[in-house]
Amino acid sequence: MKKSLWYSFALLIRTVFTLSGCQEEKTPQRPSVSSSTVATMEFSGDTGYKLITSEISTLYSIDSMVLEKADGEFSEDWVYRVVFDPPEYVKGGNRIEVLFGRSSLAINGEVYVRPNGSSFNEISDWAEGAYRYFAYDRILP
Image (tube, rainbow, N blue to C red; front, side, top):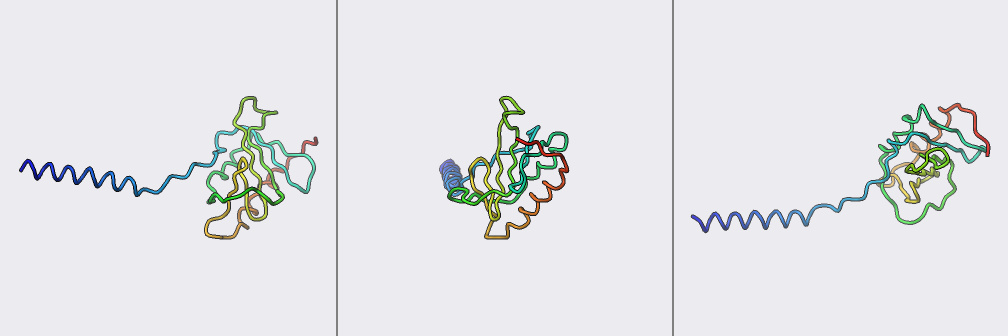
């Protein structure tokens, strides 16, 4: 009886260690913007930027975009750029820069694309809609 209990326990431990080795490697989380208090938003076709403060939560949906990390560098020109907690407005903040291109985006230099080659259009449309939503005067450099 004792041998059988010991054998079962050893088998259980072995199974746990075997299964723990089979778990998927967790990918590092991309930076979250949901604690940001200020953002600047730019469109490559305009000069200056829009300063987003009281309605910044509108931009938090960037965190829920379904994206996968891609290899390489962001090689396309950005169309929209959002900088969360820029140092000129938030001292000691966690600056996060999001660049929206036509087929990918970069968050702090890391490139992301839509999974399984799905269309990037909805992400581009979101960025365009967000920029238009903020009908603020642009702050010129």
